[in-house]
Image 1 (cartoon, rainbow, N blue to C red):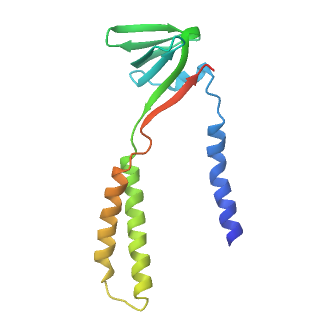
Image 2 (tube, rainbow, N blue to C red):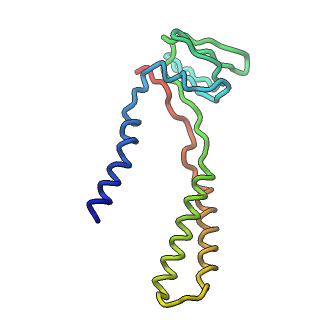
Image 3 (cartoon, rainbow, N blue to C red):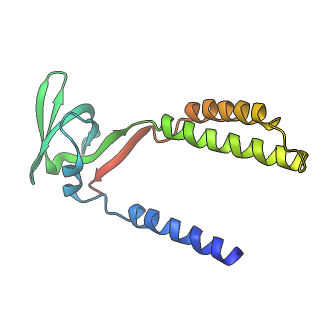
Length: 150
């Protein structure tokens, strides 16, 4: 059984490894951005702009700044990052699952012969607590590099 679990864990890690090895220095990565998406662009002279992505060609990227549309030549772009969205809903569901599992496991261990529904209060309480903690955990928030020249 231990060997099966180890094999499953390795298989789950393989897709993540291939994503981690993807090349960020590929200008074509910018084609995955949607018009209007919040991005941060850093130029070779270390100037940084937060803008909304408009479009990209083989030679330049067009963004919308507060002052209007701006085109940056590919040669002047050091890095482009996109804003990630938080995963509060997913984290809340994970928290509920962990809270319910913890409540059921502790109740089963404390009273293995119990057949009454006394565990319902613990299960609901820990499920709600897990959901609250999961929703408050800030994962996935921040900037993710889409393109990096060097």
